[in-house]
Amino acid sequence: MSNLEYCIQKAREIPYTSNQQRHYAIVVDKRGRLISSAANSYVKTSTVMAKAAKRVGLEHKVFCHAEQLALVRSKGKGYKLYVARVLSDGTVANSEPCPVCALLLSESHIKEVEYT
Ligand SMILES: [Zn+2]
Image (cartoon, rainbow, N blue to C red; front, side, top):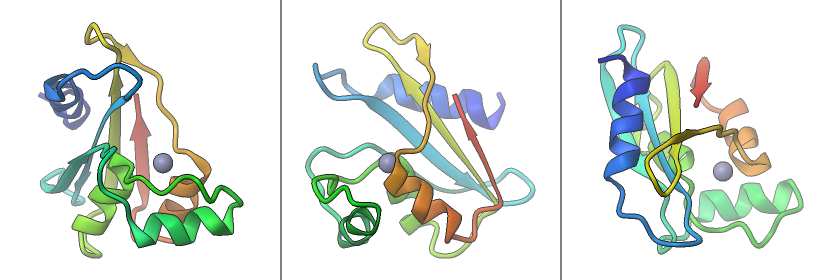
């Protein structure tokens, strides 16, 4: 299974709740070994997200996105980030970083990103 396939599988395991997107993110090292992982959170807020959101002019975006959580949990380690998004029926959907995550990623140690 590729890292992206693993990420998709984990996204499908997130319980479906209407109006909440199912995103899963993993950070791997240069050899592709798992460093950290996270799903979107609609419960947790983050001061990292809140500060970055303010800088891109989106102050309402304070909930933790999968890639931001995976990034924090990777504690400065890791090389590549994968993000998968699946729809309610498990179909793989296109995903892209929001302006907040794009800013955080651009200033992080991550060298490559791959989104579904
Ligand atoms: Zn985001």
